[in-house]
Length: 520
Image (cartoon, rainbow, N blue to C red; front, side, top):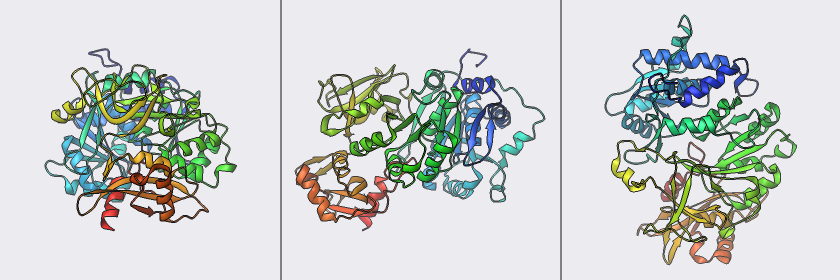
């Protein structure tokens, strides 16, 4: 609790949960790896906070975290939050120039680096224009020695574990989450402490286990980090995997008695296709959360059949946190176009579907989804013009997504407002074609996107991954779409790939697919 205000931040809430049962295992690292008790994590957070405070980190300062999934990055994030500073998550896999733009735009005072990412950190610093942040490493290693001081060594050198007081205030930014960034200045989404603390303190993930055992196999910089916070606050255990590997995930579910998984749809499909799935003991698994990008109804139906009533769909945005949740029973019915619902609004969230003139649309009519809640961002970091484009004076956030509400308040996503392929004769929503292609028995995964030709006219392109043991030619796939949806929707080009390239957070990387198509 912040002494001056009486405010309990998310870091306070997590530290209190860790202190209640210091001997329990809070974090496990990989297969047969290190186990960290709640008491040890509690002590590390306070030691890190003391060291960082001694280097000038506090309210109004920005700390960038460049790290994979390791326990030290959790401790560092909580330490920064305790001090009232803001964190910025840098995704391993982004271009160094983009990472440098993000760090510079966020006015980073400190860069904390995973020793395994020392080359990325050096490239980031090379591309930095303007004052470079101070650098500290999250552990030792000869390759990282010239980057900066070792934060863990500095923590170990403290003679005792200090009790660092909380400094965060409700209106302070706890983080900046960056969207875009392929050109220009990335948009930094400002998220305040108060709503995030409320979520961590009061949100209990339905069917996540009691106590939950959460497997973080996607980046902690994305939603896995939020779910790790909720797990630890609930007295549970976080099992960390460095990266997603379907066989390793299934083995961990059985070995570590995992109760909760978070996966983006393309990763869920890879689990479904893994040959070890039929022989894996899934009896501990009570919740699979998925979201982050459009999901195939046919693949979700298969997942519900294989895993049972454990699927929970989450719809949200960096600008609004979580918006809706689809429960297992919601997967038993389909809505417009055969889609699976993303569920009903979460408590405290108000939804609207409106036309271009701001009028509420009746049930069944598609329009832009607007949301109002305590979780909506404060605004974009130092970009008031962009903020004004998406955030109304009365607190409504324009999501940029197209959706439909049914008569029971369920929301169905149609597509992105701007993710349209404008072809001769009309508009094509990529999700419509993706959903259709996923019903073909030979298609394991796909991504549909627009590619501009020499005359700037757009064409529909599809990248397709074939299901094991199946073969089909591109002409047959085009004919399949034409027969069922019409020539307007048929891909002009079908690219057969071994795998759909993914962004660092696990979404289909359509920018890379477009670039590949343009080069070809």
